Length: 178
Image (cartoon, rainbow, N blue to C red):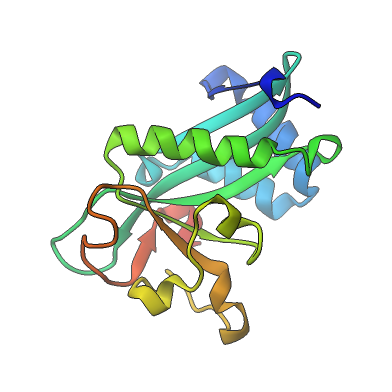
């Protein structure tokens, strides 16, 4: 498949059913679908980036970047957490997830976001610029992560200052904090 045929755009309120369909088809898990519904309705996740990928006018992928923050202190640079990234099964392993990540990070840079975090697959996300074990770098996750999965909590600096913006435990929006 030619990735040039994939169109990515910011989601709109009228895309809600398409987003839920993509998430359901990609994960087939009500907890993930419920999280997406909650994220889309959560004011504390703003400013959020929500993107849909289309192939021949059919939605095939979706990604959300919701606002993150330091749990303590007055220094609160703009930061985001990527979750979830969904691609429908018949379009997985074709590069669409990577396109969604890249498009999202470009939008985050334009917004002035400094860091992006993800709790995800230890070999997939580093291919897209994420650095494993963000806690070791001074950014503990919002919730406890077993030591065996510490490499799965990752960070990517996207601002000019890199990671020189302060350190501290990361907090997330209310929907993700449940």
